[in-house]
Length: 248
Image 1: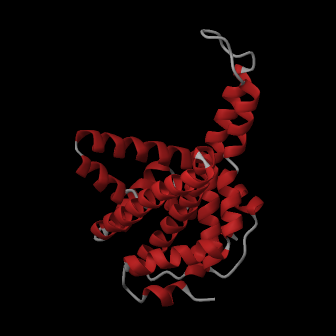
Image 2: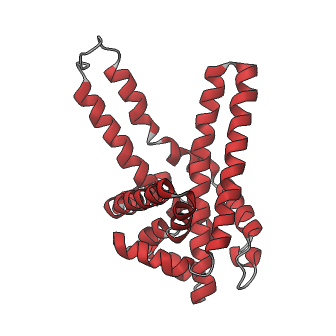
Image 3: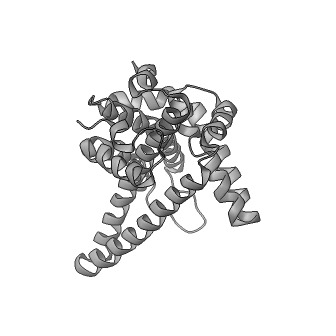
């Protein structure tokens, strides 16, 4: 198996190599990454089945169960972020990972992950509302916060501060990376929904587009893990085995 440091080259933050290796890592364990990404959707399906339709102005009889299932979806959504990062580092070390183990690792960091995700999202949203540029810059500063939270097991504010430290000097390249992936994702998603929808019908096109979103979630988590590792490799000279020891 190709070693990640051999792909990127020593001391270099290469956008093309990062994207290429992200796809390689993701596709080595694609069924497991997709399985993780699909887990949060299960409560939403049950919520639709349980709540059902109701008369206008009336709450469904199973409204409480529906709320519970939506909350479960949110919990699982944050947990799989940690699980996918764990899976990415396992694959980087040449070790397979189990979906159950990955989910367990994610749950172990659920509360800090929740805090990091909410605060990061709010800051980026506020920055974007004031003017787009501050929001994008904050996104670059905090790009590694989730990976820091999972791998270094830091608290919410410490994870965000540590991300700012790691991304310093590389934020323009992170911005380029984010924009390339974002634009490519939007174009690909639109093509899938339009082309497949034209051939198989709108419902099938929408279903395939949603599956592609699950794929993008997995790719984003893997890319986040690789960027985090690359920054620590450049700045601190750490290797993948030492970095991933926390998962053992």
